[in-house]
Image 1 (spheres, rainbow, N blue to C red):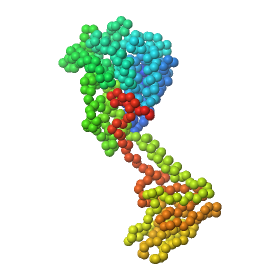
Image 2 (tube, rainbow, N blue to C red):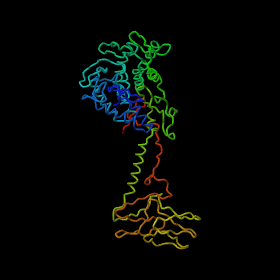
Image 3 (cartoon, helix red, strand yellow):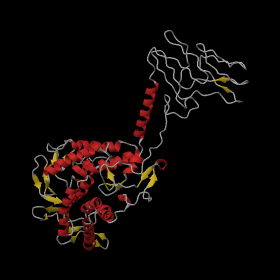
Image 4 (cartoon, rainbow, N blue to C red):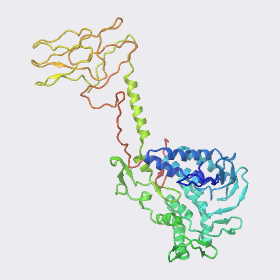
Length: 500
């Protein structure tokens, strides 16, 4: 598990605490996997997956994780379990990582968590904070950061639950014109010293996802309410200020960076359903573009995944345009292994093998009239003589000699055996001897029982997928279809395959 703070120049400070929040451990897989897929360096994705798996092993007997953990002792320091601050983006990245990477392991992790969350933290479509080992309520509050949850549920198709929870959160917005950081569910009011609204994006984010999933204009109404509240309450000459207290709309002298990166971006996308980030527009209208090696990748076709700061990642770019070195090597190894396995399977001992070559793989013919062909014989074989003009060679070759065919006067033919074909030897005791064959047919002999027979293409044949020992072949870039994934379920074009 990573430390909470790392100096990029000098590393971990000697005074750095080993205690970090759950989200600080589990919010790497989208960015780090993207780095690995686009650079071909697996180090980043490996580190992110190790952190996720290490965190997964620390969950309680009832399937929950706490809020802060000591990464050295693996002991939970804060044992409050919920979906809000300190935990939120961990669950978000399990779902979005499963979608973007088509990863069943990440999906199964989240589904296991979700069962525990629904069992122990959900009350009347609110989500409370509970003790991670016992499941008893520790904080009956709603945090504004939890408002991402309905949008996350919509990505998995859990729309009924998502809609009901969103309505609870939206009622708080209508009550104050914004979401306070903490809201007491039993009291129906703000929590002391947690009355501010720093223009967070989570409720608007969920509205965008749910509108895309349902088409219900209720979510457009939330967007209109948010737009009017931000304009009327928070606008200043130099920007948009955080709300210090939602009860009287007093302002703070600061504007958070996520307001620009997330809040108004999701608000814009809510009102622009045909935006290319949604994959909007008719098929073939030029909303996508070719990219990658030789233009064989499809970019901008939709299904973008937003990281926790609303930066869009294109799954098609990772699927098509990354350096699939391992995938290509594996494909080449499979083809090579299959080819070698096929070629090295000799006939059973004591049986002769005489087969005609497949169509298109016939023995190369002699040169055309007016041309001469002379090739060096294999070592240890004498140079065969061509027949005299007007004579033909009707007898079968004696052991150690090759067989020539009739040629027009003035031409000689001397050919090497095709590559990877051993020179036919005379029959050894206990083996059968092949008969004379008409011109144009190949003559083969049984190999000794302890030897295997390999064949390769003639020199005149097109390039083969069979590689010679030590030879390397550069595979062409993998192409990507316009619709790169087969859909089992889809929201915003984000899908999961049936055969992951």
